[in-house]
Image (cartoon, rainbow, N blue to C red):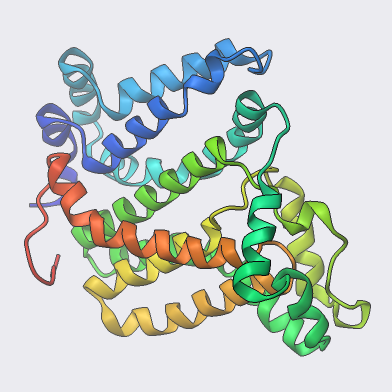
Length: 308
């Protein structure tokens, strides 16, 4: 069956599992908009949450209406239905800057994570790693790995699509969206600033090359409090493992990028080592749970290695 013939029937049958995950996240992320510390624009954000939930997990009347609308443009609708949860991720990340202060009023749990660093690693790797290797080639390699995050999010599902493997792309995107939303809930209810906000850069001036400067430019838009567990590392690990389910040979070089990313997160002082380790573990757990979650939300994920 062609992808263009799926969009409207899928809407009439029920929400896609990825849309359900998005709706569940939006529901769980709504309480901060009802607390005294909420932003002045809270009515707008609350309305956007409600509208997004209705679209992502529509009740029957909304489902029928959307199905009729999308039936007129089945090709574009199919792409939109598959991709919009992943395309919303940057907006959901930006919203964290409003939700985190509403819950905690400026309190962060960095002291707890720093204590874990001392107990587990015998120091502060986010300060010590760069000091031990103050070389430009190391810095540029690891900062390049850190920036590969955006490549790791979007390119693997695009390649699945290009190969005509839509179901594999859907399941990979489900896994990644699941990983993102779990990380974002940690950020909202257990915010950690990370060393980037608390200390000067650990990278020596002579090691600060173009990729280092580009990374700092990108981080201007970072949400304070979104450090633990590292979504950069967690999502990258999830993408590598999700890709390995459907195309193992491609996953190998993605794994190299994910390793460089994790090292770069600590080397550049953007994350505590604890953030990176816990992010990797959370990403791996999300991959393990993804098939069961997909089935629980109404999808079909055969047992054993999936060849979608």
